[in-house]
Length: 201
Image (tube, rainbow, N blue to C red; front, side, top):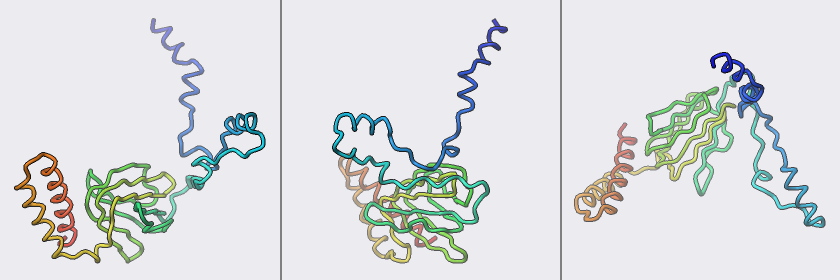
């Protein structure tokens, strides 16, 4: 039985699976879906095929052979873009697992954001934002995409309104009668507590 096992492990399909390239080793250029285009041309030869989401996306930059000196950051909200391909030294994001510093050459990671301070370091200048939630996608090619539900520069926050909001949600939590009301109040407390910590810390 053991003699057969070693022979089975040496089979070509297993070796081929081991030799499969990582996603970062694949070419950065996008390839059109040739099968779809050919099928479309057979059915409707006098009309161009429709554009797919791939047609509107920029090709992924290749992974550099050495670690770049800068991290390229995209920081977007549902209604605006705060940073677009901005080259910075480092970002610190409030991940649910704790504060996470991202430098050029960081390992590819996906992390969920919690309410907290996102800081962007560029030389001696540090820009801080309060983010409510979202995700950060760190790519192996020293690109980071930060997607937040809400974000505001820290210097635009009003400490008095934060304190008032915290007091309001605390009273809503104590007076809530349903699980939904209590859950909404708890979310408000969590966000306003994080806002308060951001302003006082």
